[in-house]
Length: 394
Image 1 (tube, rainbow, N blue to C red):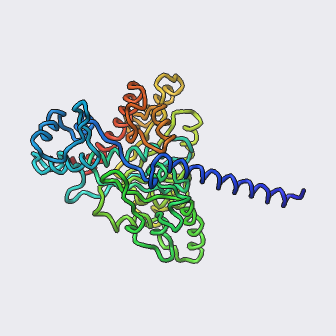
Image 2 (image 1 turned 120 degrees about the vertical axis):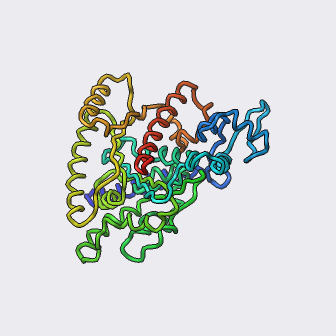
Image 3 (image 1 turned 90 degrees about the horizontal axis):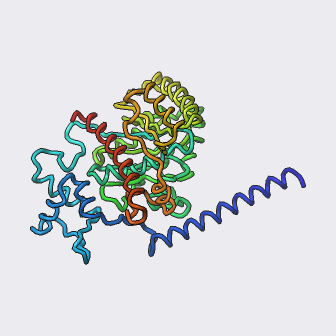
């Protein structure tokens, strides 16, 4: 058998496996989210709703009894459950009678600039997509207007939000449409509403790789312009619609990542505290610094409001990990977020059904497993929210 025959057979096998896997994933999605394969957000207990709003459960009960705001679903045990839409409407109601602006709606005010957070690392398994998804959802549930952008061609963030690239994005619909060199569309055309109030999504798929292929050709023809401004210029079209943009960057330092870096006001680098990951991050930081120098020499402002390292998949009982965490904190100080994202089977199990931990019912796990994981996620995301507030001068 010739090498050409072998190569053709391999191509056929890969294509067949790709099509079978895509069909199985599509079937799984339809079985999980019938009848039209769309996701919905779960209901929240009155305690969860009160915590998201920053009020006492007794105060929520009083609002319900007084007939103010949306009516929660009341179970046979007289327990109240609120939808994400209910919480959103309650937030607006409470803000109208708040002592000072922003008590319940924490987003931008006059003079505040859009926060664009680039979540990045070029080593797989660092928790980049998991961090991006939970950050975007937590901020939206806390009242921020959020746009999540999947800039990774592997499109895991997209799949987590109920969009299957192989079936739902056959005619485009990614950020590539808004940043391509020929006939770009307004970015508003590729923004999708999600099943969570305040959270919109620009999905991703393999089409994003076209930007990596087209940019060198455009540069050789001299018509790429300042290519690294393309994400920033696209986002400027919807600047007034959002408080925060969360960009899940691809796991490589290509043209997409450079353009995202140029747009970002904050940079979150995820790192799994293992020696191989730390060694990889060393190369990542060196290459990033070199690329930022090149971009800055071309006239771009590469200053950022903040940069932080997020420890992910951290196991407090793992002695080697603890040594590496201590090493990183000694080197980088407060550039390492105080709160780490703990490794948890709850987060992994939620991912099996294409959900985040914020979407699954607490009853799906043992109480201690769920509580430990959710407390870890909330601590991370609320610390980042504090950085955003500090940037706005609050």
